[in-house]
Length: 68
Image (tube, helix red, strand yellow):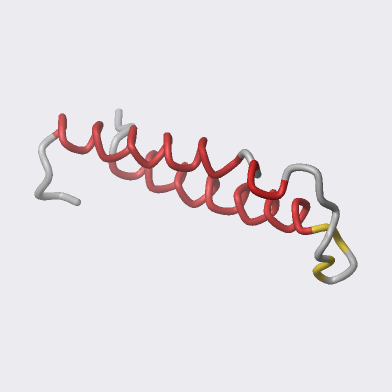
């Protein structure tokens, strides 16, 4: 990402944030508690995955865009 301009980096990170924001709402599985994965409803597993993705995204954001 070193070759991207500063403005382009901001656009890429904003688009990534919007994608994660949209994916964080599990609208396709709204009123369902099945299937169970490892004894947990699908939405719990989905939230765990989204939280991990946001953590990785935050690390990348801090490394490439949020500098002193």
